[in-house]
Amino acid sequence: MNRNAPLLVIAAGGTGGHMFPAQSLAEQMLARGWRVRLSTDARGARYAGGFPAAVEVEELSSATFARGGLIAKAGVPLRIAGGVLAAVGRMMRERPAAVVGFGGYPAIPAMAASTLLKIPRMIHEQNGVLGRVNELFAKKVDRVACGTWPTTLPQGVEGVATGNPVRAAVHERAGAAYIAPGAYPMSILIMGGSQGARILSDVVPEAIAGLRPELLQYVRISHQARPEDLERVTAFYEGKGISADVQPFFHDVPARLSEAQLVITRSGASTVADLSVIGRPAILVPFAAAASDHQTANARGLVEAGAAIMIPENQLTAETLSEQIALVLDNPQGAEQMARAALSQGRPDAAETLADMVEALAERKTEKDK
Ligand SMILES: CC(=O)N[C@H]1[C@@H](OP(=O)(O)OP(=O)(O)OC[C@H]2O[C@@H](n3ccc(=O)[nH]c3=O)[C@H](O)[C@@H]2O)O[C@H](CO)[C@@H](O)[C@@H]1O
Image 1 (cartoon, rainbow, N blue to C red):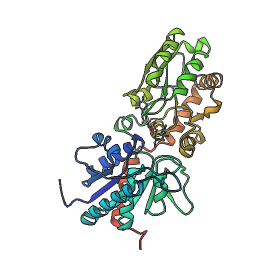
Image 2 (image 1 turned 60 degrees about the vertical axis):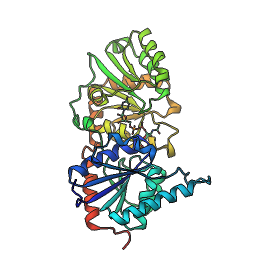
Image 3 (image 1 turned 90 degrees about the vertical axis):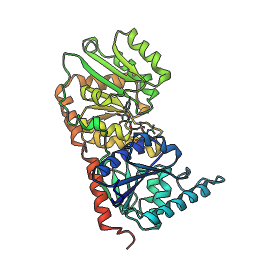
Image 4 (image 1 turned 180 degrees about the horizontal axis):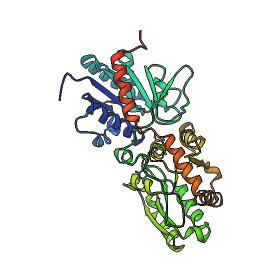
């Protein structure tokens, strides 16, 4: 490794939602000859295996906190302070060229240290509403990159729409030709995000079974169900003579997406990004309990572009859903239009745009502290 190469510190943690986009930026920066260090905690470090081996991983102590202030729990401020001190010490020695935060509380120490040391820094928010840690730093960073557009930001903060970086297998299928619904086998992909969603297992099979027989005979189902729901969902489809592949997690979602005539799904940030980069019509059921209802915010772009129909959880019934599915499958031109509209929202260049922002930021040095 070239020790003279500029160093990027990526601060992220906790869950896949923060770590997948972080990994994508790490890959881009390594390809551009940078050194990359992932600053996270023990929980985030479990995802580090997915990062390229050249990425150095630093585990710092941090802690969770509630919106509006630190949880008054013994040891929390101390743990965060310990992490910040360690990050400050290291950054004083190594002087990173830039620091990028992707959210999650393990990002706190590196983001706080870069603020104290006036190192060029930015955040990337995946969802249409800022997460807690990103909200804390939004006014203290030089740039705020937004994966979802529009993103609700605090007053006085300007965002740059970059999109959410997608995995290589999604990238390879960007804009893959869409076969409009017709009198031949049609695929419907049902996904509940990385954990699966019980409500989709409760309602979707019945909605599918409610389609009129002339339509139903052509329908082929891929249904991601939580492990505890697998058996009943499989049995239901079997009982109705519906061809269905039911699994707890599909490892080939990009291929299934490109083959699908319709997708019924939650609206997590990466799911929305996958849909829009490949370009498929969707019925979106946002997870109502998500912080600040961010899944509804994530769905907004696709819905307003005419690429997706949104059904709030409290309005989701088998009858409503069945009607909406039939509306899409009975209207090939409309479905094609939805697929095109989805593509208009896609940002296949998200990782490159983010990498360009990092390079520009490192060159200009920090403006925030002048
Ligand atoms: C319940 C919850 O709080 N979810 C949050 C979590 O979602 P979640 O962890 O579900 O994250 P996303 O929807 O962003 O990403 C899920 C990814 O898994 C893929 N996939 C899904 C199912 C499957 O069988 N196989 C597969 O590969 C999808 O194509 C997508 O690329 O982090 C997201 C990003 O911060 C948030 O927007 C979500 O609100």
